[in-house]
Length: 149
Image 1 (cartoon, rainbow, N blue to C red):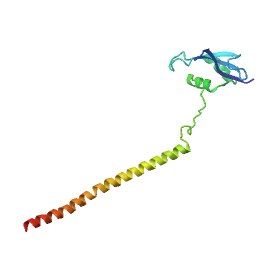
Image 2 (image 1 turned 180 degrees about the vertical axis):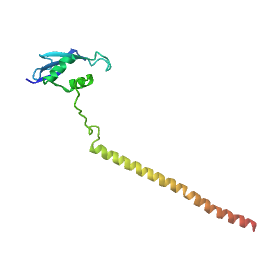
Image 3 (image 1 turned 90 degrees about the vertical axis):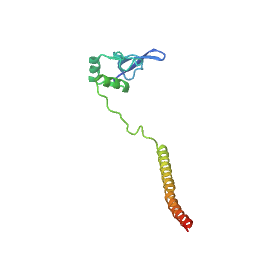
Image 4 (image 1 turned 90 degrees about the horizontal axis):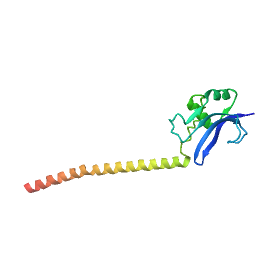
């Protein structure tokens, strides 16, 4: 018989309250169970001591005889320090898809082009001003010479 440690739901509609039970893996979620080893009230604050209550020695016993906790119960046991949970980190989960990456690359390319165009325009605007001043200076000298003569 496969034995699991899982949650059995109780409470009213939209007001969940769970019993942490040891049961046959084939029995229904809220059906017959072998032993109740704790409670879980998700409506309480995360730092509240009554959110998760466990009978540690019974949980350790059932784990010792081969009971398998469900994912949620494994998380609760890990937080309580009873059983370390295997890491299930997926580094690619938050990575964007192919099309999103393409859009981001296109956007970055357009921004780079716009910055280059702005630099070129700024350089073009700055360059003619000294040339124009240099052209005006000889013209001013020539007018001074013509007035002296």
